[in-house]
Image (cartoon, rainbow, N blue to C red; front, side, top):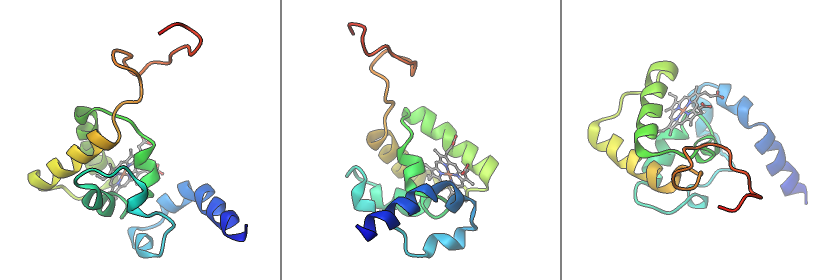
Length: 119
Ligand code: HEC
């Protein structure tokens, strides 16, 4: 019971955690890579991305490989993410595209869909 309150507090503290300097990422965190989809490259991706912010921030997104690629470029330009070697970037992009694909149904173009309408 007590534990779940702590977990909830950590969850709510998420956005604040992202503001902290990267050093804070090495503090013990509630996040565990094994709770995320199991595809090749998970540990590399988790280790790299979670250095700055919770991996939940990443897992909450759903994008195509191209969109993830753009997102990483943006992260490099906007948030001073270190430039990745091509091989490493490929591993990470393959993982992200597999584990967190666009959530909208095929052809949905990411738009909102009326759940009551026949699909
Ligand atoms: C050098 C630090 C750093 C690294 C490494 C990093 N990010 Fe970020 N990222 C940030 C910061 C800073 C933000 C903004 C956080 C906020 O708004 O709370 C952010 C935000 C995001 C967002 C949310 C974007 C939005 O529109 O809200 C996503 C998605 C994201 N990062 C994905 C990634 C992925 C995937 C990786 C690993 C490949 C990664 N980040 C690695 C610093 C980093």
